[in-house]
Image 1 (cartoon, rainbow, N blue to C red):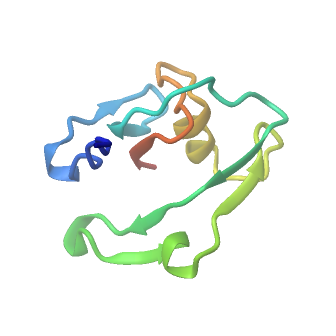
Image 2: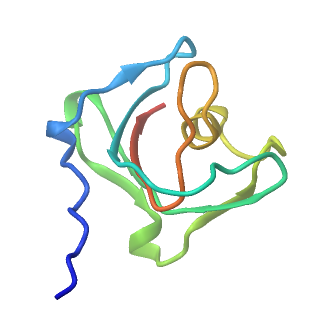
Length: 105
């Protein structure tokens, strides 16, 4: 039979690292393949949640809307912290296709 890959780790099981920019990240699942580079089109799903007193309250989700968020890598059209979380840099490794990363921006 076929073995299915393990599900992504729950946020409570993750150890977050902090970049000099203040971005915090942890990989729940490491993808495979080549990282994205400038000029490539990016399509991601995200869940945006609050932190602080209402920790975990969902604000927005591309999964709920069934509409991935898209931009062109390096064109300046998205939040800098999001691009760093996906592309890497400043001590953050790049995400690989199929990966799941939790980021605090």
